Image (cartoon, rainbow, N blue to C red):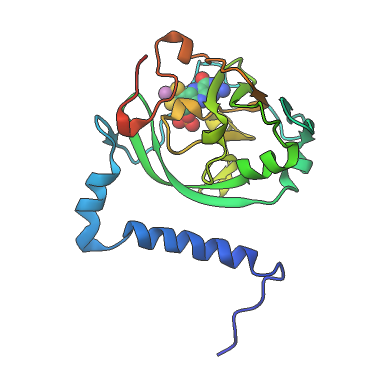
Length: 223
Ligand SMILES: Nc1nc2c(c(=O)[nH]1)N[C@H]1C(S)=C(S)[C@@H](COP(=O)(O)O)O[C@H]1N2
Ligand SMILES: [Mo]
């Protein structure tokens, strides 16, 4: 039997696949006997699992072609950048599998995302010591906010693909934010700017009665 071919990048792709599978092992994915328990432990309070993927937004779905898309990362950073789509795609790429929890009570398991990890952007722009908050600005005027600590979570990414295909316009393509640990309103679609700030700036839903943090496991739905 031939050895697996070297992927030529020092094993990076294989390492990521292995890391994903190890994560599944820790979570006991796909073990029939453990399914019910794992399933129950996976659904935050008040949520229901769906197998479709609902679309939720303010009703305006901006038509941003990859050629026209730019991402500005600025605010309290040492190295502010504006990236075009090709420059964004040339950053180191990551994959992750995570569950979506929407505050409207649906949860969708096992979404496979591909994109750029927030940590890559943080390394690129180098937030200043005073930066504590991150504000996302989107092409439809939507904004939302998280702490820098949350943004730096290893599973946070700027996703351009879902389940192996480019992210559709209705789900925020060409690029959206994915913050799996919080209700999905924190995951801005059609992102155009990521602002690092000393002060928090509650976003569209956060100033309309929704919780500033939005942890589904604590049922932080409303203010
Ligand atoms: N730009 C933008 N991002 C957004 C929203 C929006 O209206 N505009 N809605 C949020 C809400 S409330 C949810 S539940 C998710 C829905 O993402 P989906 O349509 O891909 O399911 O996007 C979030 N991100
Ligand atoms: Mo939502």
